[in-house]
Image (cartoon, rainbow, N blue to C red):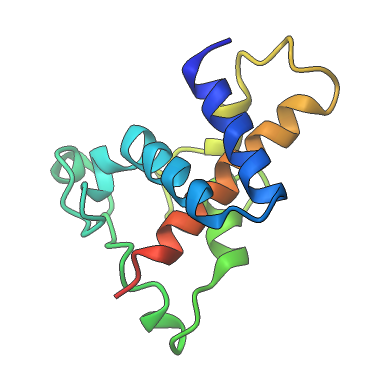
Length: 132
Protein backbone atom coordinates (compact mmCIF):
# COMPACT_ATOMS: atom_id res chain seq x y z
CA UNK A 1 0.00 0.00 0.00
CA UNK A 2 1.42 3.38 -0.96
CA UNK A 3 1.87 6.24 1.51
CA UNK A 4 -0.71 8.32 -0.39
CA UNK A 5 -3.32 5.56 -0.24
CA UNK A 6 -2.61 4.96 3.44
CA UNK A 7 -2.79 8.71 4.06
CA UNK A 8 -6.18 8.86 2.33
CA UNK A 9 -7.56 5.90 4.27
CA UNK A 10 -6.43 7.52 7.53
CA UNK A 11 -8.11 10.78 6.51
CA UNK A 12 -11.37 9.02 5.72
CA UNK A 13 -11.24 7.13 9.02
CA UNK A 14 -10.42 10.29 10.98
CA UNK A 15 -13.33 12.13 9.41
CA UNK A 16 -15.72 9.27 10.09
CA UNK A 17 -14.86 9.16 13.79
CA UNK A 18 -15.01 12.93 14.15
CA UNK A 19 -11.28 13.62 14.27
CA UNK A 20 -11.19 16.89 12.35
CA UNK A 21 -7.70 17.71 13.65
CA UNK A 22 -6.34 14.46 12.19
CA UNK A 23 -8.15 15.18 8.93
CA UNK A 24 -6.60 18.67 8.86
CA UNK A 25 -3.11 17.17 9.37
CA UNK A 26 -3.75 14.80 6.48
CA UNK A 27 -5.19 17.71 4.52
CA UNK A 28 -2.03 19.72 5.12
CA UNK A 29 0.05 16.83 3.76
CA UNK A 30 -2.27 16.62 0.73
CA UNK A 31 -1.94 20.38 0.26
CA UNK A 32 1.86 20.32 0.42
CA UNK A 33 2.00 17.40 -2.04
CA UNK A 34 -0.62 18.58 -4.52
CA UNK A 35 -1.21 22.33 -4.21
CA UNK A 36 1.78 24.15 -2.73
CA UNK A 37 3.79 24.09 -5.95
CA UNK A 38 1.31 26.55 -7.47
CA UNK A 39 -0.51 28.13 -4.50
CA UNK A 40 2.57 28.32 -2.24
CA UNK A 41 3.34 26.73 1.11
CA UNK A 42 1.53 29.61 2.83
CA UNK A 43 -1.39 29.30 0.37
CA UNK A 44 -0.74 32.89 -0.71
CA UNK A 45 -0.67 32.21 -4.46
CA UNK A 46 3.11 32.48 -4.75
CA UNK A 47 4.25 28.91 -5.28
CA UNK A 48 7.35 28.19 -7.33
CA UNK A 49 5.26 27.35 -10.41
CA UNK A 50 2.89 30.33 -10.13
CA UNK A 51 4.91 32.46 -12.54
CA UNK A 52 4.69 29.75 -15.18
CA UNK A 53 0.87 29.61 -15.15
CA UNK A 54 -1.24 31.10 -17.92
CA UNK A 55 -3.82 32.31 -15.37
CA UNK A 56 -3.19 34.05 -12.03
CA UNK A 57 -2.83 31.64 -9.11
CA UNK A 58 -5.17 32.84 -6.35
CA UNK A 59 -4.40 32.86 -2.66
CA UNK A 60 -6.45 30.34 -0.69
CA UNK A 61 -6.38 31.99 2.74
CA UNK A 62 -9.12 34.49 1.95
CA UNK A 63 -11.86 32.21 0.63
CA UNK A 64 -14.10 32.82 3.65
CA UNK A 65 -13.49 36.57 3.50
CA UNK A 66 -14.54 36.60 -0.16
CA UNK A 67 -17.71 34.70 0.80
CA UNK A 68 -19.08 37.05 3.48
CA UNK A 69 -17.06 35.38 6.24
CA UNK A 70 -18.29 31.86 5.54
CA UNK A 71 -15.99 29.22 4.13
CA UNK A 72 -17.54 27.91 0.86
CA UNK A 73 -16.94 24.24 1.65
CA UNK A 74 -19.02 22.73 -1.16
CA UNK A 75 -17.58 25.05 -3.79
CA UNK A 76 -14.04 24.28 -2.59
CA UNK A 77 -14.68 20.53 -2.69
CA UNK A 78 -16.17 20.73 -6.18
CA UNK A 79 -13.30 22.89 -7.42
CA UNK A 80 -10.67 20.48 -6.11
CA UNK A 81 -12.55 17.45 -7.41
CA UNK A 82 -13.11 18.97 -10.84
CA UNK A 83 -15.11 16.01 -12.08
CA UNK A 84 -18.44 17.82 -11.91
CA UNK A 85 -17.46 20.15 -14.74
CA UNK A 86 -16.98 23.14 -12.44
CA UNK A 87 -14.11 25.22 -13.70
CA UNK A 88 -13.39 27.17 -10.53
CA UNK A 89 -9.83 28.03 -11.43
CA UNK A 90 -9.93 27.82 -15.18
CA UNK A 91 -7.16 26.12 -17.04
CA UNK A 92 -4.58 24.76 -15.94
CA UNK A 93 -6.05 23.75 -12.56
CA UNK A 94 -5.64 19.95 -12.36
CA UNK A 95 -8.70 17.76 -11.90
CA UNK A 96 -7.58 16.24 -8.61
CA UNK A 97 -10.51 13.84 -8.36
CA UNK A 98 -9.23 11.94 -11.41
CA UNK A 99 -5.58 12.26 -10.41
CA UNK A 100 -6.26 10.97 -6.91
CA UNK A 101 -8.22 8.03 -8.34
CA UNK A 102 -5.70 6.99 -10.98
CA UNK A 103 -3.82 3.84 -10.14
CA UNK A 104 -6.29 2.59 -7.52
CA UNK A 105 -7.21 -0.62 -9.29
CA UNK A 106 -7.11 -2.74 -6.12
CA UNK A 107 -9.40 -0.51 -4.04
CA UNK A 108 -12.60 -2.34 -4.96
CA UNK A 109 -15.71 -1.02 -6.70
CA UNK A 110 -16.37 1.81 -4.24
CA UNK A 111 -13.07 1.97 -2.40
CA UNK A 112 -11.33 4.29 -4.86
CA UNK A 113 -14.18 6.79 -4.76
CA UNK A 114 -14.28 6.69 -0.96
CA UNK A 115 -10.53 7.29 -0.76
CA UNK A 116 -10.70 10.16 -3.27
CA UNK A 117 -13.53 11.83 -1.39
CA UNK A 118 -11.66 11.43 1.90
CA UNK A 119 -8.55 13.04 0.45
CA UNK A 120 -10.52 15.93 -1.02
CA UNK A 121 -12.50 16.48 2.18
CA UNK A 122 -9.35 16.47 4.31
CA UNK A 123 -7.78 18.98 1.93
CA UNK A 124 -10.87 21.21 2.11
CA UNK A 125 -10.88 21.01 5.92
CA UNK A 126 -7.24 22.06 5.95
CA UNK A 127 -8.03 25.05 3.69
CA UNK A 128 -10.88 25.99 6.02
CA UNK A 129 -8.46 25.88 8.97
CA UNK A 130 -6.03 28.38 7.41
CA UNK A 131 -8.53 31.12 6.62
CA UNK A 132 -7.50 34.59 7.77
